[in-house]
Length: 282
Ligand code: F3S
Image (cartoon, rainbow, N blue to C red):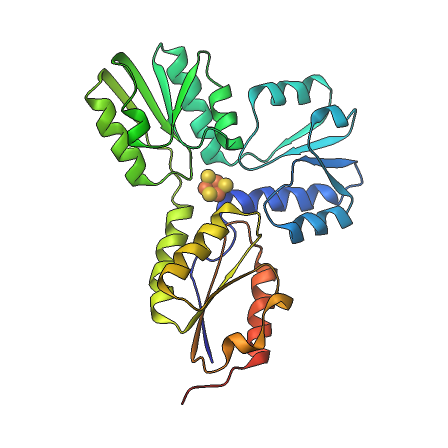
């Protein structure tokens, strides 16, 4: 059985950076917590817990020690509170998310109305809009942008995981409503690169295995995309969830993994599929 692994399967730059920081900090004995799970991988969170890094959901749960802030960032209020409490703050906010936060701050300071294209309930967006010095509008689609009023000056920023097509469609709607439009394309292509690769791979293999947390939105989306093109698609978190019968009669297996899936989980899955060996068609 041949195994083809998507080139960009697994950790994106920002998640890798945050995870490495967390493991590095776990080693020095200072009481360390993360504000929410560091990434959407229960296995990584568990490994960190084994090293003494606990998850807190609120800063009120902490009086001292060190707090690690996740890759998708926190609100300006949370950042301020962490510093005011005298905690050692390890800011693992992805630089791409930080950039979106800075542009929102800049635009609002320069007197622009600010529009963020994204999911208003996502913690990344809650963080981004908190850096504005005036109220920010969030839209998820061009349809939603259609109900915006006419404006003199508008600045647009995108949630990093937005699709380029959605940003483009929203900007087109805004062009008709705004005298001066300023757009910062803050989309990070880690998500689209993984999705495009998955589409190509799912079409050319007999079976797809998608690895990553069931609580990881980008992994679930990868699995959905693969399933649309390859009915033999299986989403697993760990190697022990693989079933031998999935591979009976398969010649080629494709593997991809979400942006929050560590390499060791991918390696374990590959090792297990190799051990299963499959029952080749010819
Ligand atoms: Fe950063 Fe993009 Fe990953 S914004 S956290 S590199 S998906």
